[in-house]
Amino acid sequence: MDNDRRPPPYRPGRSGKPLSSLSQSLSFHASPQSFLGTDDAQNVPNFVRAKILNRDVTVISSYRHCREILEATEGDSTLELLAAQDGSPVSPNAFTAGPAYRELMADFFPAPNLLLLDAPDHSPIREKWNAHMADVSERIPLLVRDCVKQHMEGWNAGSTIDLYEYMKDLSWEILLAIFLGLTPGDDSKYSTFVSLQEDLLRGQFSLFPVSVRVPFWRSARSRGLSARAKLQTFLRDEVATPTRGCPFSQEGEALSDTDRAANALLFTSSIAVKSLASLLTASLLNLYLYPHCEPSLAAQIRSQGPDQGGALLRSILRETERLSPPVVGIMRQVEQDIRLGATNLSDPSESFVVPAGWDVWLYFVGAARDESVYPQANRMMPERFLPPAQPEPGFAFGAGEKKCLGEGTVRAVVEIVASVMLDEGWELAGAIDPPGVRGWLGWTDKVSLEQMAKDLKQLPAQRPREPLRLQLRRG
Image: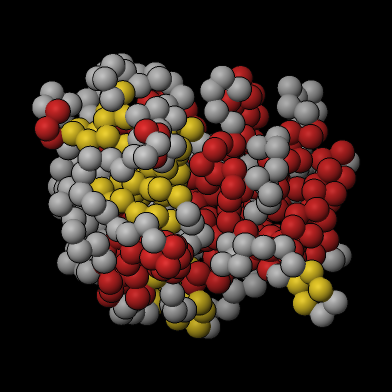
């Protein structure tokens, strides 16, 4: 057997036979939570070996291992659970994003794409993007607040809503306003753009990954690729002649129009919208309906001064990020044989090897509920992130030098949406009954993985499988 493809010396893992591989891929696509929960030979906690999408994969759900792998891109020699096979520090490019994502992303989000870059190309481009997005974040509060207020003018007190769908509509409005200066009233531009992005997403996540076009039928992938081409043309035109006042469109930047147009395809994607809607949904459910306090967290924030109330709101939002990250995890390809320690690297008998050429899939949902890191890890604790406490952050935005570029923007948006609802007197009323949704939120800490899989969709972003029907009220 080729040295680079040898099985790692820990538990035999699942079968690599073609039919088994297809079954594993379908199972993972349907629900990562359920897939990881069906392992009947879990001899090594927090690690599952599998064959998914014809790739050799080690799925990792240990907080410390996930963080060290993400920070290893910085060449950190102080890592305690991670080393090259000979015990030396791993190289800065031991875990690469480009090869891991290229097969799944490149056709739909082509270069220049920051997500697909690794060292040494990534750092100088990332610095330019960091500066650009920092400026965007500073310029969006008034725009987002106005956008949210205008959107909520269409809400009717007493009406029953599907909260996730409401947040998805709002997320489209916010992201297209920030990155393109588009509003729902812009003729057919807005609705056409949304429709094309949704076609792209269906093509990207199609279980029939072949582009087929015949007179009366086109595969989802074919429609997705066609949508991408139209979106690229649209974005090039928008960046070349930007809407006045659009925060993302700034003159005199080091970034080229080509860079901004290509990356705006991802920033305004249906994946980005669904992720923002997921985080907004979980945050508002905690704010208004968290069952283990009286009065509600929203009422407590309203009764406090700006400083104390603001601190509690931010703690609730950070805890929501930890428990309910929109994206369940990320992928990296292993470029050299690496050794992972179960508890440390000093005892070779307690460590094992993942060979070069394999993928590691970092499962953030499990990692952020690691009981060795967080007391009562599966339970929502609104005060967990109140100063002066400094718990480890969750993985909603990843970690390390490839942390999500939109972290500051997304956090600003979520806080503004929550603040406007509080200021404008909006309330949510109703019951959240599905056990898996309550487990997702951390309201019930003893929920099986199978139940969470039943009640949640996890790809491309986590959200309730069935509509959450809640009543809008206004005080």
